[in-house]
Structures are given as structure tokens and as C-alpha cells.
Image (tube, rainbow, N blue to C red; front, side, top):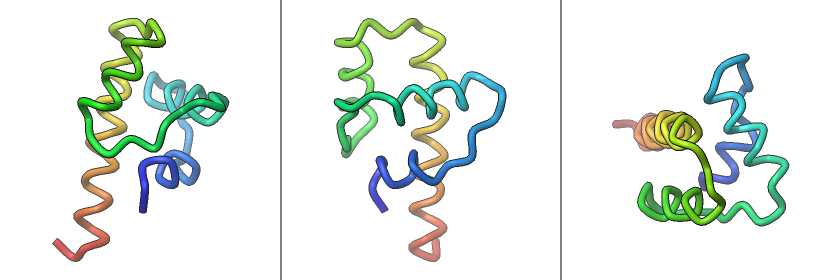
Length: 73
């Protein structure tokens, strides 16, 4: 599962993480990043506020946890 696939299938809630997911889905240039530093760099280049970066970090951590579950670990 790629990060973009995770974003596409993640449930959106009424919180900063849900806002990040909705924004990522609407962004036609959103990259299929391979690491947190890549995602953070993309957000910095887009001028994301600290709150958006913090929300993205939580979503990224959820993605990594989902990958571990998928791998059986």
C-alpha cells in the first residue's frame, strides 16, 4: 500500500488530520512520498502551516502503523 492509497482510503474525521487528508485528496500534485522527510519537504514547499504539518505527521504515523499491521508485525 502506498501513501496515496492510504490517503484515498482513510476515513476523514472532523479534525486536523481529516482536513489534511481532504486537502491531500484534492491536490492534483500531491506526490506519492516514500518517507516523512519527503512529505514534510513537499508541505514546506507548498507553504503549509505548522498545524497542517503536525496533522500530516500524525497521518504519516498512522500509515506506517497500517503498513506494519499489513505485514503482520
